[in-house]
Image (cartoon, rainbow, N blue to C red; front, side, top):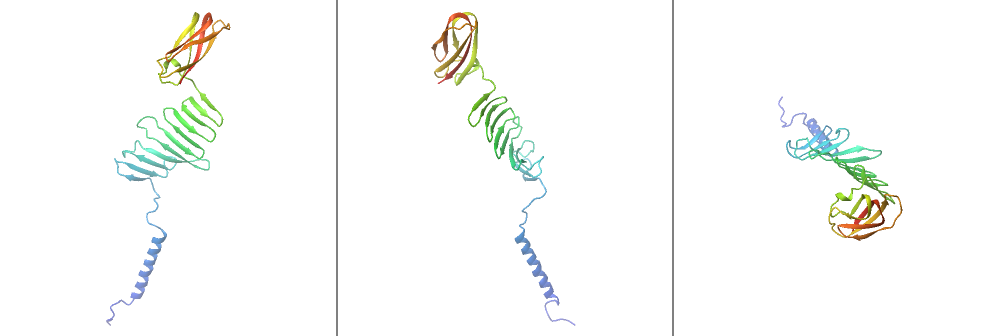
Length: 233
């Protein structure tokens, strides 16, 4: 028997199946946007041999972002999130092609910068430090201190603000002229201490001062050590 209907006998079943599939597709699109998560990494953005950004959630030991200026992978700057005590610490590392690596650290109560060569700056919850190696200034709530050494005045340039040092005169003298390393850029204020070679007390004073030197005289002919600080003003 030949049916005169243009539709198959089960067309209602097929129609319900198509409607169900459309409903499922619409529900999936509304509940989970496509491509919103990449679960296997690293993810590289950019072309090989050109500028690239690499997102690496595993990193060496922590999540990292690499910023690669030439796409070689040999000299990137790195953004790293390190686990701290109840916080995430942000660290920025420079590339190394120009020399030692520099680091910037941002934590909840600490900001620090370090060059691979030894200079550093640190801002903490109760102190700040700035310097190079073992020669640095420390700033606290109510005090400032210097640790290390001061350069001798004989090696400083004409625009130095402070000149520290000492001069020793053996033999027997009653005066001396102490010369600065150069004619200084502005007026100088020498502050001087005198130590007698014989240990005897004696009168002494500064008798002249200019941008090139100062003169000092003492009462008893003896060897002396002259300790000085001269400030430019």
